[in-house]
Image (cartoon, rainbow, N blue to C red; front, side, top):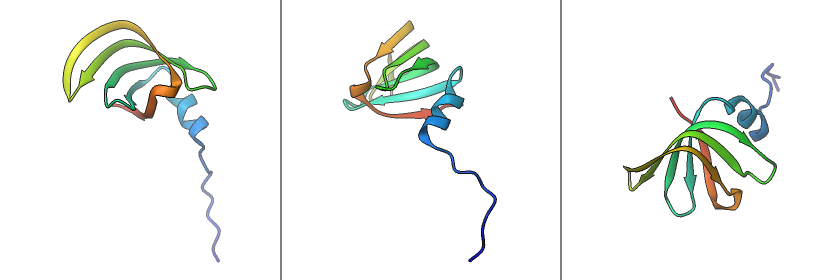
Length: 80
């Protein structure tokens, strides 16, 4: 069996690298928030800046800063 020299990345590594970058946060309800990830904690509570709210793919609202409670988060994805 051949070994590879790749390092394994954990979800914590991804989230640490995503701070300060643009992300998409999808909630269990299907609503998406897009903006800059300011910080997060161990409970996945998220603080975002320059946040836009999308419902059904349509822009519904714009917020300066937003706080999202972690138990509502379905996933966080890096955005371009």
